[in-house]
Image 1 (cartoon, helix red, strand yellow):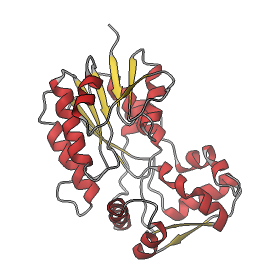
Image 2 (spheres, rainbow, N blue to C red; image 1 turned 90 degrees about the vertical axis):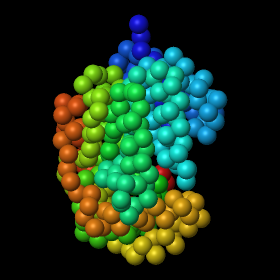
Image 3 (cartoon, rainbow, N blue to C red; image 1 turned 90 degrees about the horizontal axis):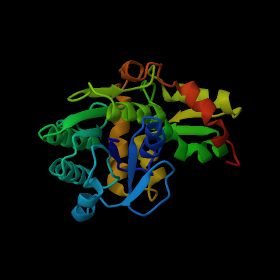
Image 4 (cartoon, rainbow, N blue to C red; image 1 turned 60 degrees about the vertical axis):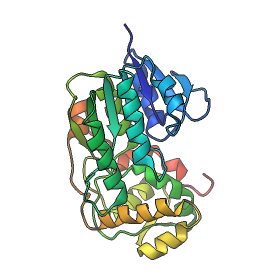
Length: 284
């Protein structure tokens, strides 16, 4: 009998890449979205993590689920509720998207929130696998137009290296652990093949795009002021905490999990830059 796999956040950066990754696995993909959208290779179910009733309908008949964090201040609570509903409905396998270095005692709010969810889901009667990816390479893309215009990629980090990961690798790992046995109870730390500084990221983008883009280390206050109004304050405060974590050199560890699971190396920052070079142009 064909397995049914539910993907939450199916229109997001990671979720949208998981759906095509699952298409080759011979499973039925159910994509959860807050509004109906045509998603190639999947049936769409309209549901909201804040609406228990809609979630009960969404998980009915589901064998495995991918749980992504919504961009909400109560994300941890919403994820715990989803996991409870999924477990009660008989979902056998849950793959949780957490974050590198998740820790209940972390000074970084997002790392605390993720750790709280990890702790909760492990107490449920399900096969749970936790994915802990580091900084997303694709997190640079919202700043691409500004970098192309000004020739500067700015962030509140100095020379610290971060083992950033391409979200396409996260999606492919997620698809693998959703469909393979042997990952129950595991926590997979997901990183790129090496730690890179933001100056090296800018250099890779420059080489791939033909644009002269330099890196500028700015203060957290300057960075926050530049982004004020573009995201909720709670999210901006959390982003500043994330970058303080990176700047302390706490995110430079390199894991082999991507290669171990997929049988190939993780994509490098040069791979990412080449594949997204056209975005870093003035007219993109």
